[in-house]
Image (cartoon, rainbow, N blue to C red):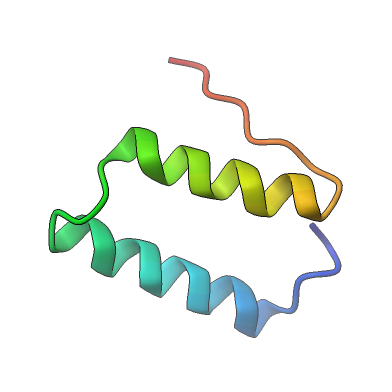
Length: 49
């Protein structure tokens, strides 16, 4: 994940915030999106719930 530039992280954060505020994505779908992004950069999102 360190390869992601700070600007890219901010853009992802802004987009996910917009999608949740407009009810286009719920938390489970957001975790899926983050997992895909993380896996592409050698990481993994772990849902501890």
